[in-house]
Length: 267
Length: 269
Image (tube, rainbow over all chains, first blue to last red; front, side, top):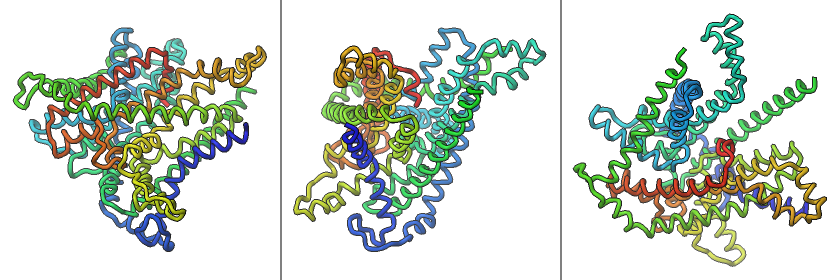
């Protein structure tokens, strides 16, 4: 049984990783061939870094991801605070609408935002580009922040805030000294989630970016439309490496953190 | 302090950028170019029923395959010790962090007529087989891209199953197979349903996987919508009508799945 499990696990991992490893191996191939390895080269990497379209879209992606995740963290956290103190009915309504961008197919969210932007672009004389992208990204990011922060309020002792005020804090000070540290883990995971979703988003960006502002996924898409472009292989390799490093670091931090909590529990 | 007021900026944002756009989809679906009420476009969607049937069918197959692959995997995962579980889960989820266009592109190069699989087959005297630009390739792309969405909810539900419940079942005379069928499976159902939704919804609405792996001949609902908004067939009203129907299908599907009490925090992961 143990052997069977291991074989099965191996098979699934093969299915998941072989395509990626093939891309990686062929990113070092001297020719454009996708079947025959003819020699080792770093040419495709050099070309990648010299490719202005890719570099510009990378900058756009990072800029939009940073701006959108910061904006949606602020907007989402304030929203969660407010929603938390609402009565049951309005809270349910607001949360249901907030869930919409999460449960709706992405293409519908993209199309609906495009309709809105087209409507206003004609009347207010602006063009699709950085701002429409940013608005779209904030819109699909905020719900994740709210959904990460809201549960933290439920876990918090509601009397803590009152106790702080009894002990001489004004409401604002009580919020920053008592409430904020309690909900901070939710805010941070909401921020990180927004950031990664923004970096990775293709579908909604595709409908809201316009012809002149491209993000990296959109550039990748137009590259895949051409038959063979080994720069994609090089790009995949770099992205894969970054993902591996980030996940390993994240894992190490979490384990250390977990060990610390366990130690404190024992003491 | 009026705490509720602090949500005002978001409420405004929510109305303008979530609610109004959705209302606009509905508005465009039920009007013509001049803004007059019409049912033509919604009725026209019926012309594309073949594409709808194909999308639902392919998404269903992909969902079932994901479930068949992911279920044993999740079960194997929870049998490991805690540290190995964490590492293995990370390894299984890692490909998901790469952009899905790159993952789909990888299969494009593997499946092509001159691709690696065909050239390997040729060395042993088989093929070449036409694999790219087929329905099978589209399903493969869906399974490859959305498999983690099935593994994660299944794992997070199964890992919460109390080990002593399994021991109790064994003590009371269940063999491993019976324990699986009568204890583990019923307890894992919320994960199954949430996994089904998480795979089915993106699979039924994709337009990239079908375009990259299915060629021009295997259009899905997503392709149809994209063509109305950004493609050659430009027709915003028809596009809105199709989007509306897609939304209804997805919402119906979710309502059905929600009948089976699904854990909130599973969706968040």
